[in-house]
Image (cartoon, rainbow, N blue to C red; front, side, top):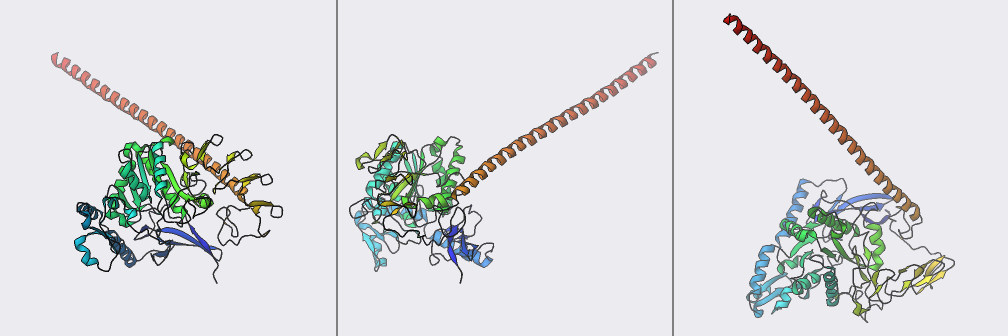
Length: 521
């Protein structure tokens, strides 16, 4: 029997990885009998039935396999000819409301006269202008949790987030998996800011033009159409890249590591193309994620030595609501604490103004906007609540804890009142700090020593980089000295040879003068 311990997604560039129809694959690692077994698998689909690509690390695809996957890739792209579909959109939009239809089975817009070809299909008739420009209210949300399950922002959250962007002075908004934000900006604020939607849902080809929407895979930063890459680059270089914001609502079941790498890649490209050295003009990120998955984001997003990605984002108190998810809503039927989804961002929380009409307030001590139930703790010197309840301070633990927790003298920490003392949770996975089994990074007993080693390694890296830079300067200076010395030698040689030539000419002239005198005599 093989002992399996979960799957890791290995951080790194995917350009040279083998490709499936959804772009470059990701490199995963699975521990079997204590050994790490690496393999490549699809980045978009988290189940082999949806995309059957699988290749062991250091193995190569045969010519037949390469051709087969390339064929599947072309077939997928050919299903969505963006230019033709957008021309058809404008053609159907020009028709009267009675003639406009959409087929859910075929996933395309049709005319009323074409309904005969869709007899057994689910067809929506009499499409209004509002529906044509708001496909998220027309299309059925995808519900496959193993690929691209869609949860759409509520109208209130959409409006609140766009208002935050307006107050921040956003001019370009890159919407990754946030079609509701894109729709709202294009409807109400088209004169104030521009928007570009990047999404894996190919159905949007029917409603948005090539300059407004790109078919995109977040997990490997892959654009399905080559022309979309130029559209994306043109967008992030508008206004010299200033006041550009990225808002991303990822599938919560997806791997955090590749998302972090993608956001770092986009941020670095934004800096490179716009030649930005000042952090004030760098790409601002708003990442939507549940607060209870923050530790996963911190531990797995990227190595400690790597700057950027998700690790450096800070959590705001704003609760993001969804229309079609019972747990991610702030109403009476859902949780009392409201939606657990928050905005993680590199924007200063002092500048991210939250709606005061919903009870959000500004904490002068923390210098940030917080929720109504979040009270400032004088001992912790911060607003400590995360889950929508008011936390209480434990003097023994020297930190704030949830109100339902109580300090246990046996376990020597705060826990729920009804718990089994000394019980260690049955953790199958592996700690991402010490690479050992049986506990998570949060409960790692060696975290302090690991953090110290990480700090020393970072310091060593800095010292090595400085030494390399100094050596390069020395080498360059010695090279310059040699070049200047060689130039001087060349000049001397030229001067000597010129002197010799002059002396020879003078001798010839003198001899000619003597000969003339002799002839004259």
